[in-house]
Image (cartoon, rainbow over all chains, first blue to last red; front, side, top):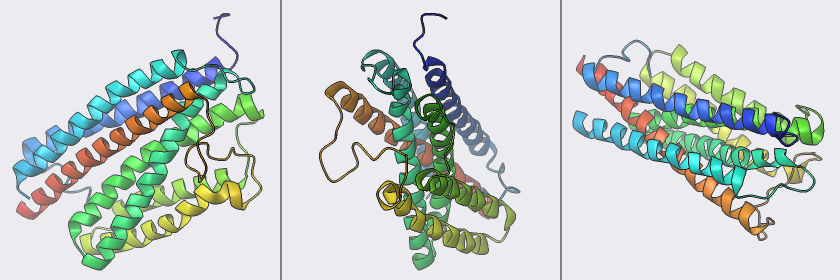
Length: 48
Length: 228
């Protein structure tokens, strides 16, 4: 890891957090979409 | 709108956001490989290509929530309430990226994770306001009351947005001033500006796709409630 420039750890962490959040939210939407399209009843109690 | 149309809306949103996520991989590669290392900030400056577009989408998102909520209070169309809620949820995701990437940039450049200066504090307040907006929505069960109360909270957020953007001019702050979204020409060298503008475009597409998908899902759930 000695070849990495100074500050690279911060940069990689920031980009990794963003990637996980964006992709994770997309997967969550995809799952909710399938659920609701399939049954049409998923969100009755949550109010959302 | 029919169930098929709502399903198509969700599908279109998921497709747009999936394509945007793939394009975002390209932005990551460009940010690391095609931009020079900035002289004073060093490698940490590369966080800029992520932080600025995330902040843009968060503020754009909260502006959309505020404007659509204002329209809801006027027209009382429940679809506007569902759209505002969808835009707020996605805006919170982009806010988390903004609020994590900012301190990760500040630590190596400023020597501290956080400063309680005007820009940072107002941004944090705006984030908490929209967390409150989403909490309020899950706490109120009557749809009309929920829509009205949350629209009022969203309007408070809308008032805060220009203060967040202009805080670097209105107050003494250590946060850098805008390099693109300002009255004069952008002050960035060629490749840095190109990657930043591409990242802004891809993030905006991602935001639009996620909101569209979330709205389609919310509409499907609302229709199911009516049918059930």
